[in-house]
Length: 482
Ligand code: AMP
Image 1: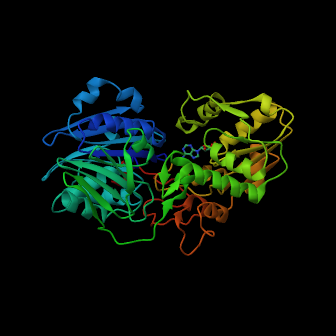
Image 2 (image 1 turned 180 degrees about the horizontal axis):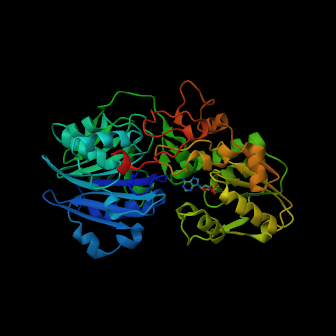
Image 3 (image 1 turned 60 degrees about the vertical axis):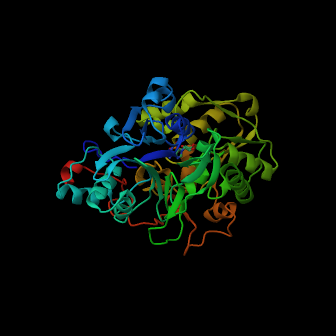
């Protein structure tokens, strides 16, 4: 879900998590718990919309799920056996409540609310067309485009949603709630995850299996790329209304974004990360006394690396869990401060040691630079950085927060230059083929890559209608363009 705030033309991308449940007496409470398990997918705002079959009820708020949906009063007000919820994190600009999802609208067929994970890459073009046709937008999110396209389409809610989605380009996993059904959809490339579950006869559609685990629900299967599922009184119905395309699941979900205890694309995320770490060790190990993860994101890869390299795994950096993710800090200054607030060197496992540090990615290089300094100050004799993804050379236009290309360290420097910038004795990234090998494939087939790996290769799987490659995905001013 992308926000296109008319007064803020900086980069505007979002990361999101989705949850929907049909047929449970405690639908809202279960949705709040599901969203809590998905909090890593977005910490800035959350919303839940429920229906009792006649009326819709909603609560949207800024901040984290636990702070806003834990009260009985809020949950009791969200009546009904059908509920959907959304967590989001937008990277810049003031976030306004009217952008917080799920977005509700009244249609000829009745009410419908929708939550979106992913980014539409032709959102601005569509929005301009819709504004020219007289549509009045309530929010500045690309998700609302889907509402307007549905309003102009024909038939029932499923027909209209399908017709609307034929117009959009980009990545989307969606959950929607109408009076008598929950709908889940995954784009034809299957870029963002979406899974189905069951709890005591109720059916669930959500971003990750960890949201099923928290409520003790059973994992049924993944929603297939290009599949639309309807959850109603008769069970789960499956439709394939879109042209079949080759799947391109986001490989960064497996590297970093999904929770390690989730299963995505048939793979346990934790195990996949360990396998990448082992590949990394095979490709680029150097003599060292300890392998140290950058917590928490580097931990599974470091475990895999240490086991493969037969070097002791040590917690050489301790993370304070009571601060938010580094990326949440809006300015570079605060971001630097955030890194120091978040991590501390554990002298007892670093002093006098040759250290291999493992992290999942280098984006701007801020985290690595600070941590390397810290590890050296703690007495490490050598610091070697190993990264469980290839260099991030391109921005993501599909729902992972990356800055515009010019701010990516790997865009500015080659590997030697990056090593100098972060101050390490050596730096290595897993190769793109090594990454694919860790996913059980022989390597990356450039003619038919199995994953969306555009952030590492620049091979974007959809047209970038509104997003110049190399620029920010949405450097927009809707006031000028609309
Ligand atoms: P940087 O300091 O800009 O190089 O960021 C790299 C750190 O941020 C790594 O430790 C990653 O685990 C983490 N990271 C990478 N991508 C994201 C993202 N989209 N959102 C939040 N954190 C991220």
